[in-house]
Image (cartoon, rainbow, N blue to C red; front, side, top):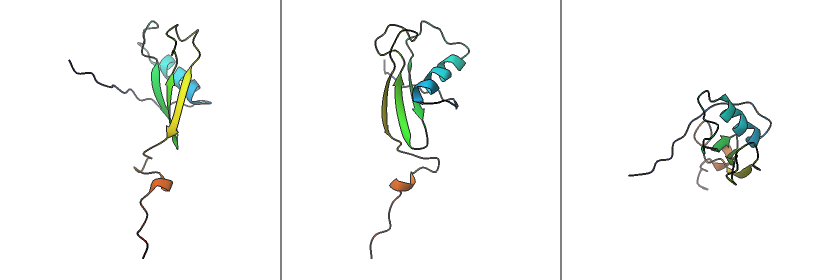
Length: 90
């Protein structure tokens, strides 16, 4: 059976990516508190933050969250300004 990556998206106002991940999980009305679905991507204007709220598998109330940040590959218009194609030099 093939494996798929499934993405659930919600806009959240938060202090940082870890706070955003926590708020997103808390906002989900049908989330099972025993769920192992604790990894989210929190995206701001310039970065994608991969947040694992339970990297040790001890439960999100007891874990130390892990966050990996990388430059965002696409902006609202499809490209970040500093990654926009440049006109060839003439």
